[in-house]
Length: 259
Image (cartoon, rainbow, N blue to C red):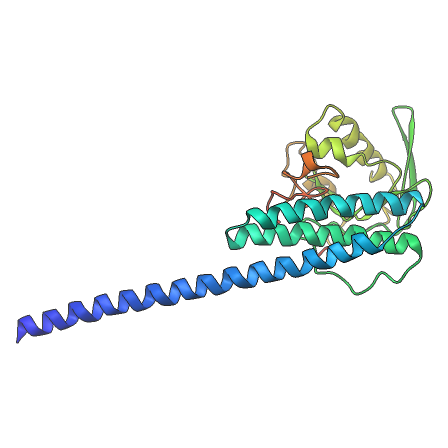
């Protein structure tokens, strides 16, 4: 009798383990299929925007270039993705591309369309609400909430070398060398410090916890670049951050408040 009960117990344990493994495998397969479908959906939507939007204004052309780069990067990521995490990164890249496409629509004077899911990299970065101008190392820089001939470079918001950079339009893509770790990185950080210095009575983009806290958070030059672009605005920058920089396509991915 005892032997029979022992055999029965072992059989139940083995059967339970097999059932759990099958259930877990089925759940993982479903999660993977859902992640693939979600990433593919945003990628295809980005493709439609890239192919159908056209314009000659500098702000439009630059935004479409950035959107096209994300479209190419997202396509490559989708081809190589084998895990839920990898499909999530491809989705984030496509969403960042759509943020640039949305900026192009704004520059064209078109309805930007429905809001997009928030980028992980842009969480807490907010967006510019006031124009500002500074001189750094003999060069003049501008930033503001609207596109223009002198502010053609859109940034969807994120972190650059630990600093929270709000979404907005800039006269120069000063964040690119900082994200890429290039020689001009320090110059870019100097521009950041000047554009968003506490010397401005109203920084034009208020964090809920106050600008000072955000400035302190970014005080470390070696801070993380975020989770997306979201890398910079080029293929070489897709490894570090608009998942936390301009386009962190290989970093940890993505809501930020309005400033």
